[in-house]
Image (tube, rainbow, N blue to C red):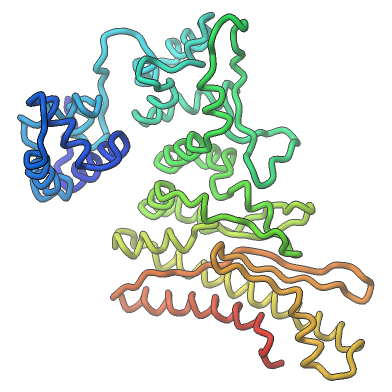
Length: 408
């Protein structure tokens, strides 16, 4: 039985995502729609259809029955998928393919497929899509987890090997055939496209599977291991920002929010433990504020305030220790000693990281490094407005701590 989504805004949002995924923008989709329906398309017809679909994608108007044949054809989707906003899928092909395997919930079928001598798992179909691509399209989390649990694929290498700053060492245990056969795409897709790990994380968020989230290092990025007290090099994190994960977290329930709001430990490239938070914590808050969708935003922000305050206190203590250490060597007073100590202070306002180090009297390096949280969004909610202001103030206090002209 069709699980019809009754909220046209959700259907519109899902349809827009599918259109952008395949065509890049709505205009290209409208051209394909008209070519499928009429055999050709001109600019005026495209403009009219684009205006009509603009209303559909915003949820102002509903999809018409006459639209469905062309929408499903252009998007390679079923009516059930579109009208349920991605909650229900049915096969649209009669033969057993990557498409059908990824749709199946039958473990016996999966095992038969994975044990085939022709290694279909390692190859794409005539549309250039692997079984993993379809599994993510259908949100078949059970199949993805089966592959992970059986060690057939992995997105994070569990061995002792290090992949600092580049990758988590994803791979597959499915071996290629002899050189005369071609098994090329899927092994490389698993190993070099972090998008598969990201899509698995999103499904794990939706299913509240914390074991899988831990195993996939869902709160981390490979570059985060570059966050260290010496501060060179610092971590380049912004290029790894993924709006899909950020939105999935922001729209999730309390257990997931609690998971992503916790501090946790990683080892930097020198083997030192660093206490950090999810690197795009502020962006999650931004989505919460924009969507006005999550009653847990208050607690989420308060945890960020506490993290920033802890970072400030640790940095302040270390800076005072460093100043005292240098003061004994400088006869020009405390201000000169502080300025010398501040040479070890680093802050990256782009990637939201901060670090400090100094050599103590025993010539041992003492230091601290972490990431900190800033929120860009504005809100009319009085409580959240006040909390965001408090959060950003803690960030500004840390910046002020590293200024050369700061007073003792």
